[in-house]
Image 1: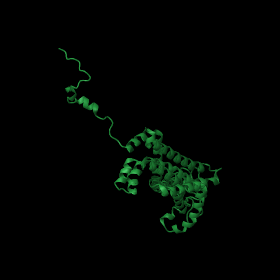
Image 2: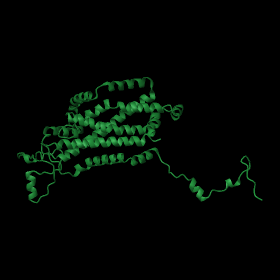
Image 3: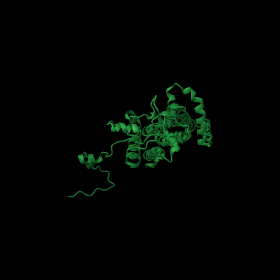
Image 4: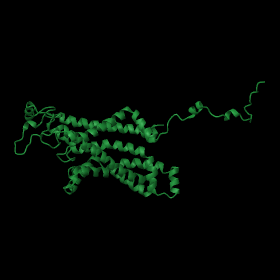
Length: 355
């Protein structure tokens, strides 16, 4: 006799529901996607963004080239090839075209010696132009990275304090930000660079910083004084939206101090915004350094930077236009790669764009 169909409203327990699961059913219930973290997910999304990933490769390649090439390159950035003590200047070393040799080098080649070529020629002082481009790129990248770190430290500190403390503290810091925003950027940068160069220039003599020069030190001071405002505003807005969360209120209820809450809760939860803003600040710092070097407020001669090389090339632009084109291309490539990489970081780590 067939069993009657079970009523859907029956309270009878179906024992088949309590049978052990088979191996196939267990495999089906196993989570297919392995556990991951926010940073790991962001890196995966960044890797899938081909434009940003290629930009990262370009940045890493340029940085490694600037660090490695000077160690084996036979010429130095300040070596004047046609100048020897007690001998007249060999004018054939001056203003060589790319891959061109001087008369003495051609004679050495005919004698069977090997002479390393000048890939980008030489400048008006007989210095190898390729190694000067390499050192100029190194200086520009160094200024960009260190200036961004300075902006990050100052902006993160003041923005976190203003956002968490609120009240009069927030009012004072934000009014300072408004005052700095009202100042003309480039005019203040030029004035501060000129003043700081005169005030701190003598104090650097005899120190390791003298090789870098007072202009670069003053540039770092300028970034610490003027360029932290955008970072501080961004961090403040992020802290204002996070400080009312339940975990922050729970920390306050247990007696945690403001510094501990900012360091352990608020800053880690704002890390995506911090990384993105710092990455986008680097090209701005490089462009500012190149501009100041172009107008003569950058590194001290003979140390080159991309901006000073472009400025020096103006004297012979009609005859040696490639001396202006090469540093301009390098600046454009670095700034473009950093901007595209920063956009990729924003797309990969901004939670609002990854719903």
